[in-house]
Length: 237
Image (tube, rainbow, N blue to C red; front, top):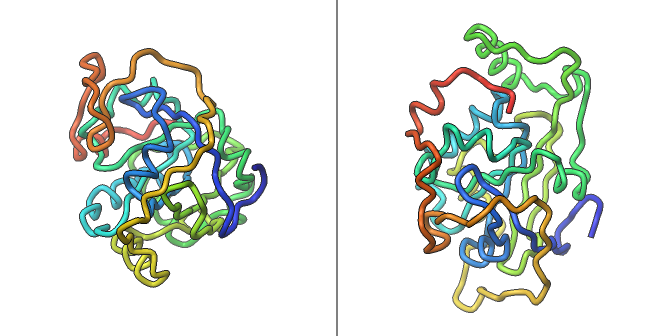
């Protein structure tokens, strides 16, 4: 499939990298955590992305009846310097080349007034006070929120109209699942028959993803806690 997704569409299965593991099967992620809330945002160095990642980490336990994963336009190898397997309580999928963003036609905007909300403006103003310097003529990546069934079927789709047009936190995700009556029931765990499509360059042996696989950890990757991660200076990875 290609183009904007809506309810009833099915995402192709693919292989993805995180800062701490490579060539993970997306089919395993949705099969284990469905209904899976999948939020696409800007690169991880963007202040808005950092702010929401911190919120999602802080409120993750509130998402009782589903799973959550975040997609960012960042390079896994760069993020691996500060993000280890235990840094965030959810998977961070890295798509620096924007393969999924292009496939799903997630919009970008070049003008600040076309993509900023009041909340985004406040976040960016505070970040600038703390030393953040955005590149000139920076193109802003708008977000996308999906909820997926165990076979990759789209149960909910929302293309954000601004940088902050995503679930406020994991409590909001839980409320959305309840409102849409998407609480998982016995027998819902159905795997599709589609083959995996590798969209990222293989990066060696796959370490363990906590709660996802049973492989070994990659001891060569640096590990930090959530607090120290978000105290770092903003980087445009």
